[in-house]
Length: 396
Image (cartoon, rainbow, N blue to C red; front, side):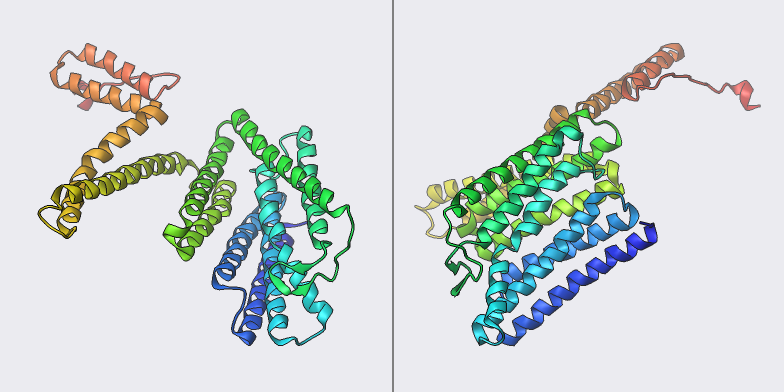
C-alpha cells in the first residue's frame, strides 16, 4: 500500500468513526436520554483521540500496525456507541424491528471489548515498531486474541435479560452448559495475554538502547499515570464524586495513545527524561504539601478550639505555612529525585559546583587547564579532549 493510499484510508476511517458518533448523538436526541453523559463522553474521547493518533501514525508509517490498531479502536467505539444509542431508542419508543433492537442492545453490552482490551494487550506487544519482539511471543498474542474472541462469543450467547437493558432478552442466547467454562477459559486467556504483553514490553525495554528506550519510557510513563489514577479514582470514588472520578480516569487512559503517538512519531522524544523528572518532583511535592496542609489544619483546630469555634484561623495559618514551605521543599525534593533517579545529572552538577569554587582561588594556568580537562571528561565523557588557549601574540 502506498503512503498516499494509506493516508486516505486512515483519515477515511477517522471520518467513519466521527460519523458514527454523530449518528449516535442524533439517535440520543430523539429520546432525550442517550446512554448517559459519562459513558457518552468517554466513548467520544476514545474515538477522537485513538482515531486522530492512529491516523497520524498510519499515514506516516503505514507498516506500523499500532496506527491501524488505534483506528480499529476508534471505529469500534463508534459502532458500539451507535448500537447502544439505538438500543436505548428502541427501549424508549419500541419502534423498528424487535430483532434489530435486541441485537443492538446485545452488541452494545459487549462493545467495550474491542476498543478496551485490544489496545490494552496488543499495544504493549507491538510497541513501538508494530512487530512482536520475537517469534517466541506469538503464543501470547494468540492467547490474547483467542481469549477476547471466545469471551465475546460466550458472553453473546448467554441466556437471559441483557444487563444494561433488562427489559430486553438476548436474542442469541443458547442454553448450554459449555457457556460458563468458555467464559472461564476466555478470562484466563485474556489474563495470560495481558500479563505476557506487559512482560514483553519490560523485556524489550531491558534489551533496548538509544531511541527505542526513550520511546518505551513515554509509554511506561503514561501507563504508570493511568494505573495510579485509576487506583486513586476507584478508592476515592465516593469522596471525589462520580463525575470527577470518571473524568480523572478517562483523561489518564487518553494519555496512552497520546504518549504512543509522541514516541512513534518522535515528536519531542528526548524530552521524556525532563517530563519524568518534573512528574516525580511535583507529584511528591503535591503529596507532601497536601499532607502537611491537612495535618496542620487538624492540629490547629484541636489546639485553637478553646479560643475559637470556627476553623478560619486554622485554615489561614495552615495555608501560609504551606506556601512558605513550597520553595525550600521543592528544592529539597528536586535534589533527592536527581540524586536517586538522575544520578549522572546530579554528579555532573556537583562536579561543576566544585570546579566553580576552585576557579575563584586558583591562578595557575596549568593547574586550571588540567582541572578543566578532568571536569569535561567526567561530565561530558567525550572520546577526546583538546584545549586551545589564545595568547596575546595570536591576537595581533
